[in-house]
Length: 94
Image 1 (cartoon, rainbow, N blue to C red):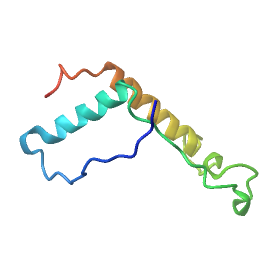
Image 2 (cartoon, rainbow, N blue to C red):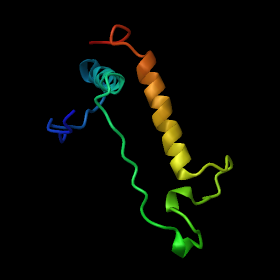
Image 3 (spheres, rainbow, N blue to C red):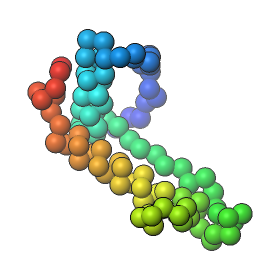
Image 4 (tube, one colour):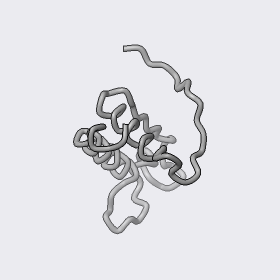
């Protein structure tokens, strides 16, 4: 499939005028569900200055869970994907 840049106008929505936030959220979940969205996580380089022999995203930043930034990001993406899979535009506003 072809990868294209985002070409739609993007605007800030103040409040939830006419359910626009709800509609936009559902459109986003539908796009994820239909495989129309990709995620790219850039590493940012090695953690040499941190005294770490690996990518900065794997560095222990002291979170109580002990999870790395890469792990937290991947878990968030997985959760969003599952949410989109269970979501249906029939459940929300069209």
